[in-house]
Length: 214
Image (cartoon, rainbow, N blue to C red; front, side, top):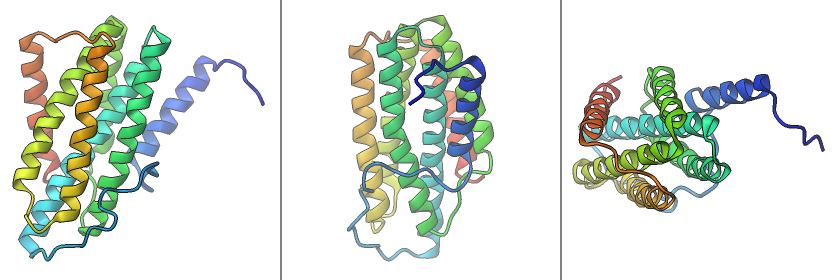
């Protein structure tokens, strides 16, 4: 087996492959079974199905952004443990991405047409944060996951009651995101200043509003 260190070109090619695998079909494979497995499909009318599809598209975009954010952070992380933690979290986010993609297909809906744009923006943010410091990078993980957990709780309140399959997926995602935040905080992530948290919240709200429709 060739264990030579990756060259700069190798790393660029790896990042391109990861970006294409995240934003284009076919969707990535999950390592865990979907929480929706074995959950009966509820009876949804057309309006409920469209609403559920919009919400799950938003969640799918969130997972695209999570993949990009963690990849950008890991690419420039100084500490090997920080890099490993980011990549471990990204692996779980790949499960979320696959689950959301599968559910979108079941609902007869599609992923966001702007996924390459979402990916590129989130990757840049992750790389910039990582270049400043590993502690700041982990702080972005803490705040990102806290905000994602809150928005997933909101989705549990607004998803159609009969859509038990989407609800099962969102509930497991919410649990995973809370754990990612706790691990990043324990690893030394710093609390971000209030203005930064506010800007992140505004950007996330804009993304959700656009992704629900496009």
